[in-house]
Image (cartoon, rainbow, N blue to C red):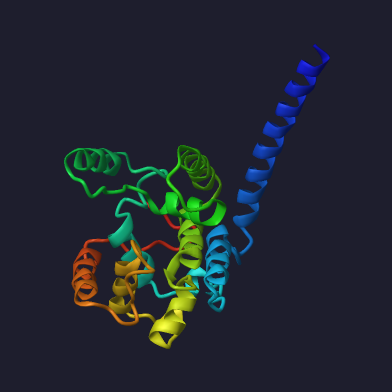
Length: 234
């Protein structure tokens, strides 16, 4: 009986540690820049294993120092209901499930909030454990962060090319300018690469990328201006 109680007590402290540490991390990142993510580390390890030089280009910049077209472009491309949902787009999930029932090539329905949770706190993968943790962290950041903070962290942490993470790095290395002066066309092209940033390039875009860029530019016309911190997101 004593051993059983020790196991229960150990499990209790594991649960307490998990919730306290994860909530603390989410609260901390509400205010502190995210300078490194698990994906950045994983990519660096992969480069070392392949015998390549480590490429890690990342420079944190605040949302107000990014082009106002960039959040609009990624919403148009990745999550058009970002300002309306609370982390999960139920309608998009339903449509993806219906589509996947009849198509071999599967379609996802991850929101920008889900992608941010995955990029900052988790590892790549499709296991049920990771998806469950992704849902948990998505709930936390939607609860504790503003939509502006979620977008800011997303645009600073997302992979935008081999060894390139975030808006400032891609602006510098692919467009020879700062993120603040990216044009609508630049931002639409960056957004076009996000599904597969290691395959698609905003520096040397293919004909398909240029087609996607034009589609996103048309969609951006129907998207609202991204609100500043403190403004109504609805």
